[in-house]
Length: 100
Image 1 (cartoon, rainbow, N blue to C red):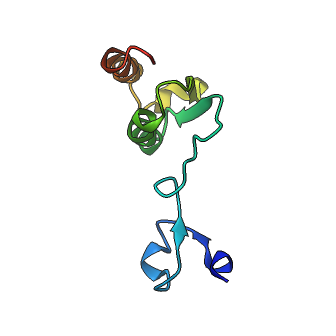
Image 2 (tube, helix red, strand yellow; image 1 turned 180 degrees about the vertical axis):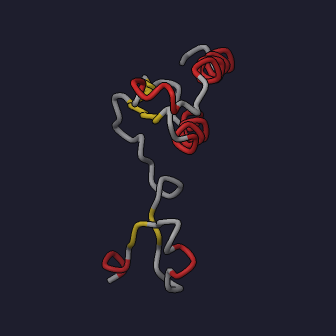
């Protein structure tokens, strides 16, 4: 049964996934099917969370509303994600596709 062979892909185990086993992730699944909205969180103290939002936000279909939330705002002394950079990025997406 193929369905019992399905696994979730993870960076640590991708290289060790046995041949013939299908790894599922957002590249293979339409994660936005029947979606009414998307919430993306980024941690202002972790750059990789902003990089994830930058990579994934453009993949959300334009007809789906998106809310981007920055967490750990009380940890401003540890901030690594620039507030203006986030604003510019989101504004640029709006200019590319006014439906957003």
